Length: 141
Image 1: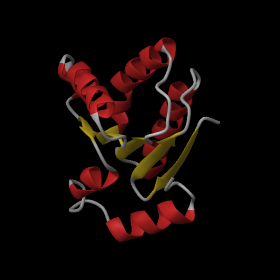
Image 2: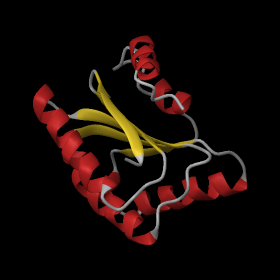
Image 3: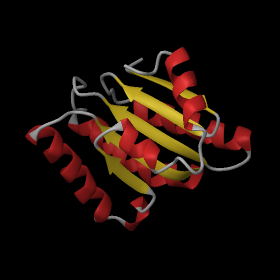
Image 4: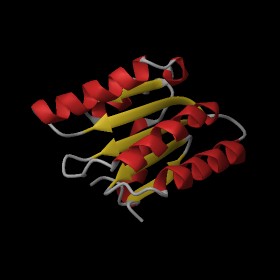
């Protein structure tokens, strides 16, 4: 599998390794199942580490298509690009531009770090518990 993921309380957390074409559909099924099992929409957080390669064109297209449906199961979607510098800034800006062009993505936010994303969730999530579980599950790097 080209990612690691887990449901931690009401957060579905994904850490990408190397995105592959089947991944978006697999993640959508997992998010949908998690939302149904909890009986409410969840928070989706996806982390693209600095060393993670960009998905190929087909996988990117599939990701955009899936994001259109993901929002029905999520209260918010947080995409984190951990890389620094010009190239990372371009990635975040391109994704932000794609999201702004579609009203379907109003729940989606693009972040430069996990801490940036989590800071906005502090009122809705037990951050200490989340961090501890993510570490226990090996999701932090």
